[in-house]
Length: 70
Image: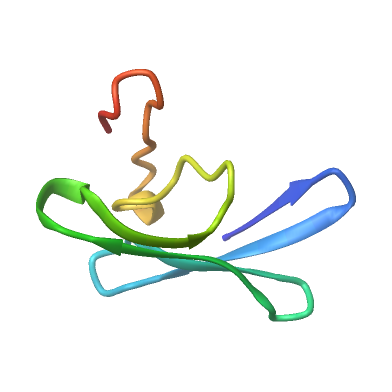
């Protein structure tokens, strides 16, 4: 999956569960990395991104920032 923010293009990379484990830019430079505990709790995040499709994001689940729910 890819997304466009302004003129920049970013690519999502998934783990075996379908959760986004990193996002890279068009030059294949890692922009953000994610790690998860049970039920999608993020434990280590390096970088920053307005990405809502984190835990099981490949299946279309998205994080609601106001409630921290999926």
